Length: 74
Image (cartoon, rainbow, N blue to C red; front, side, top):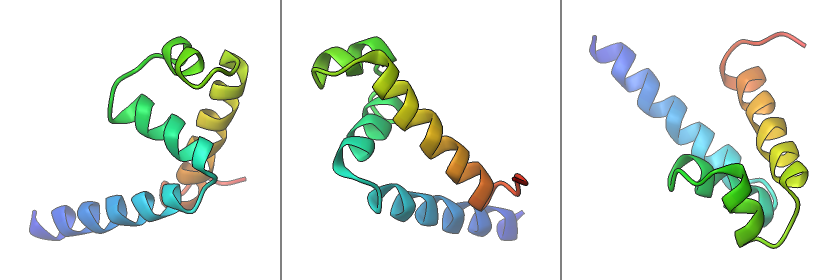
């Protein structure tokens, strides 16, 4: 349905803006994981950081997105 497609497109644009509002390292991690399909290990190596740091940033951002745009309750 067209309304669903518009809602999805608008929501994706909002999520994109949300990710861009995050610190640069979080933006990089999110982009490398979702747009470039890199693994957490590969991202950690590329950014010279630990896997736990990458996981923390990625999963925290996902929780925030789900809470804000997915209707998840606290």
